[in-house]
Image 1 (cartoon, rainbow, N blue to C red):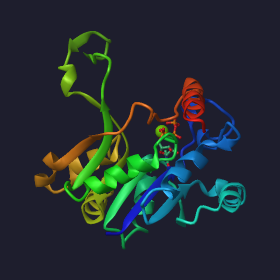
Image 2 (tube, rainbow, N blue to C red):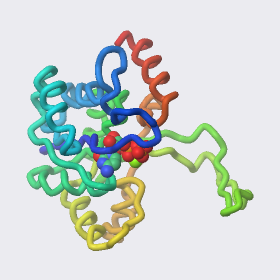
Image 3 (cartoon, rainbow, N blue to C red):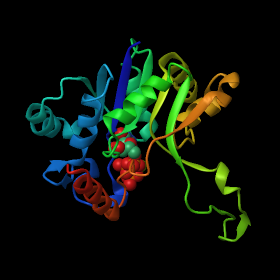
Length: 234
Ligand code: CTP
Ligand code: MG
C-alpha cells in the first residue's frame, strides 16, 4: 500500500492577521510548517506532496527544505484560490497512491504515532477522519442569531485532519465536484459525502486523535501551540 500525504500550506491566514502566512510564523525557533512536516517525515507515510503558493517557493525551498532536509517531500505543488483547489492540484499529481492523507499544514501538533494509527485503520475502513467529540454544547441559530435547535452533544464531533481516503474514491469525487462553479464544501470528507459514490457516505469513520491537534487559526492558537510544545519538551 502506497500512502501519500498531501500537506496544505497555500493559505493566506487572513484570520491570523499577521504579515506573513501563519504556516511560516516562528514558534520556539522554527516555522509552524516545520513541525507539521517533521511529524509526517517521522511517520510511516511513503511520500509527502507539499502544496504552497508560488510566491513562497523560494523561501520554502531555501529556508525549510534545504535547511531541514525532509526526504519524503517528493513534490511541491502550487495551491489555488480556495482550499479545495489546493487539494485538487495535489490529487492530480498523486496517481500512484493507494491511500491519500490530506492534512492542514496549519495543524502542527499532529504526532507520527497518530498518523500511523490512521494509516493502520485504513486496513479496516475505506475512509478515516481525525476528530474529537465536542466539549461544548452546540446550538443551531437562525440568521438573526436566535436559537432554533440544540442537537444531542454526544453525537457531535469536531473534525480535524488528517483525513485519509482511498485515492481512487476521493479523486473521483473531486473530479465530479470540480465541474461545479462554486462548490460549498468545508472539508474533504464532505466532498465524498456530496459527490462520492452514494453508497460510500456511511463509511467515513471518525477516529479520535487528540484535543491537542488544533488548527492554528487565530493569535491565541499560537500560545496554545507553544504551551503544548513546551509541555512535550519540544
Ligand atoms: N490552504 C491552502 N490553500 C488555500 C486555502 C487554505 O492550501 N487556498 C491551507 C492553509 O494553508 C491551511 C489549511 O489549508 O494549512 C487550512 O486552511 P485555513 O486554516 O482556513 O488557512 P487559511 O485559509 O490560510 O486561513 P484563513 O481562512 O484565516 O485565511
Ligand atoms: Mg481558509
